[in-house]
Structures are given as structure tokens and as C-alpha cells.
Length: 202
Image (cartoon, rainbow, N blue to C red; front, side, top):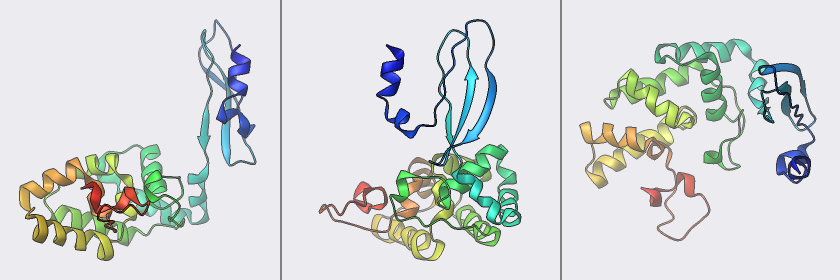
């Protein structure tokens, strides 16, 4: 029955999943390989249950410019993220890992440490501490891939001028809904299928 249900799973159609069942040993990776679908699979054993491991390898495209990628990770060093978390944040922000936030519009690019530092300094100028920024990036890693001049700064002006939101109130809003920093359309209720970046969600 389990075999049939797995075969019917959308994941199974990728042809890149291996499962092993064992009742006595701890979880142990047995092999690691990539498929033509861009997925990395780990064959493993697990105590008394079936486990499927499947992870993208898209983030590894940073190897095109590893020095720049490492510089950007260093820019995040004061926020107490693990190495894996830094890779994931940068990957989602710059199109190396798929994110529903961008829909299909995000073109993969190599981040620049200078740009990252400018964004972080701007966010600090809004009253966000490093602890706050940790929460913001954890909740909305794509913030680092938003445009400082075309989205973030204009959006803060909109919040202040049209909604009267500034100071502590602005800080609380950004902690609660950091995606507002990247809003770049306003359908005014007539949906244009860009809901993740639309002011109508505000």
C-alpha cells in the first residue's frame, strides 16, 4: 500500500527519491547524488518508519562567484545565522532558490556585499536593531533582494505620508509584515495576479 501511495505522489514523478526501511539502526545517510531535475537525494535508513529526503541544489549556483557569495555571507555574520541559514536567505533573495514571493519574475543574480550593507543600514535607520533584523530576514529573506531605491525607500515614504506610520509604529509594522518593504503594485481590488507584492494586502 505504501509503495502505491508513494508512486501516486507528485514527488515520485521526479524520479529522484529513494526510501529505505529499517527497524534497528539510527538515521544514516547512505548515498548522495543529483538527478536531471536539479534535486539532490539522500538514500537513508530510519528507525521503524519510512523517510523521504529531497532538497534543491539550486543554491549551489553561487559557485559561479564563490568569493562574492562568501562576502555576502560575511555581511550577515552579526545576525547569528548558521551557514545553512545564510545560504538559504541569500538563495531566496537572489533567485537561487525558488520563492513563491517572486512568482516567476526573479532572475537569478549574484548578490553584492555593498548592496546588502546599504540595505541593512537603511533598515537600521528605520529603528530596527540587529535582533529585529534577524527576525525580519528569518520571516522574509527576500527583503535583501528588493530594490532599495525603487521599492524600499518609496514604500517607507508611502507609509509615512499616506498612512501616518513612522517611528515605533513603523518598527512594529515591519516586524509584523516586512513584505511591505517590497510592495511594488497596487491593483486597487482589480486583481492582476501579483498578490505577493501588492498593496491591497496591506
